[in-house]
Image (cartoon, rainbow, N blue to C red):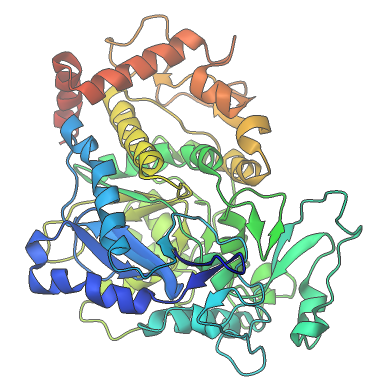
Length: 531
């Protein structure tokens, strides 16, 4: 995020210079696209910049804010330890590239959320909300704070509001101290409320009313390319239960609209900020104009696993378009993948452009279903393979922290594939974990559903014999789950997730990272089996 400091008046504001800075940053890519170290793209906020470390595939990656810029590395990283070591360096290089373009009193900060977003005088240059005639119609968030260099962002915000039939309503429990009124109830008439906010706001909650409060946040996302579709489906499923764990570990956004809240994460804020479901789809009114009652926002945790091993853990009702599902089955797509795609396609498009390829239409719909994991088919006419995106971590303040999270998740994928581990839990429990992960101090005090053991009978004999294993296709033991703290999940739980098991797994992870011959050979062996 681009921040301007007013040291005289002791104020910090988001700086709406992303469009100007992006034009300079992207010039190198336009002149020499094959040899740039980083790629830069807009985000929702006019104060946001997104940078990423490579060009694993082409295409525009745009974000919401006029204060946000997205950047990617000029080339994708490899899987060797030497490649892991350059992640932090690339992040630092990106920061330095942006910093060289900033004015005095401007800084680039890695923040998940700007604490005073939507407060009076939160932008530079100054801008004021216009709830009657602006695009966002927000009492707090200004149109100027949304990135204006691409029509996608204003279109998304308008279409979500119009499809929903009213403004989005974001309510986050407020943190109460001795100075907080009880109950905490705001008077929105001073902001120009016509009664909609007063009706939508909940007591003892911080209320927000625009997409920018969600899409104006930042995060840390990692995309992996699998060796084939089978491996991609395994990674999608096996990483899904870790989504909540990594969200709690990285929690970095406790303040919204200038108030401290009982949530430490951005997830539910974004979830509500893009919730375009009508009253019929919410189940408030009987279905008439709409086809489905949908139990989650289009920004949410996943609803179903897509690998063969994951099928028996699909314990919630999956809403999907049965006509599309049948067409996919007739086209040779298996049940699980057909269900996944037909589930994505229950949503209307909220952003359409004139696309050259038919698959662009699918990608347009897929990219506006923001789930905790994303399964990414290969684009046509490219050498790009099957990819999986891990989407929950919050961005950290330093490059060291961000690189640590990225490398940890990458190494976790190596361990899962090498040792045939099983992290799967029922989808209903994964949903519970996502809620638990966002509560204040969840990383220290929260309890999360997790497996008592991670091995299956397919795990290689190189692992410690004392580590329990179960057949990959065995029926669910009702006692295979327990609740653990983050500390117990990472460092072991006495009698449940033995420290020795945890120690052995982390030692194996360490040896993979260091490229020891034996384990590298094991990893290659299992990859060859998949191929």
